[in-house]
Image 1 (cartoon, helix red, strand yellow):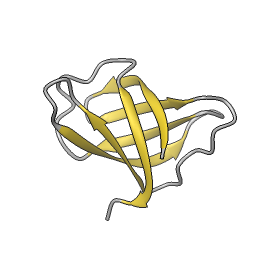
Image 2: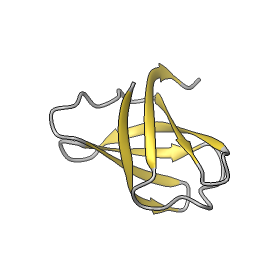
Image 3: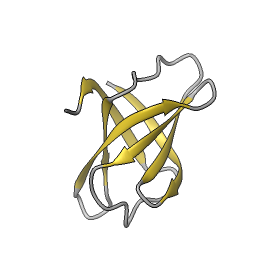
Length: 79
């Protein structure tokens, strides 16, 4: 599992930044974020943006997401 951090949230669209040198998750891979209230939210990678970030779509509400919130890449398809 690779860990990243939320860098931007616009509605259901979430950008996740990873450390330099880390393998980015593939398109359609599942990411998981845990809201402050403990709710787990699955994100699906839609695009690679830049060299160390991905753009994902949330499968649930992004209310409570903040920049810096940890995201874990599960490296499997969310379908």
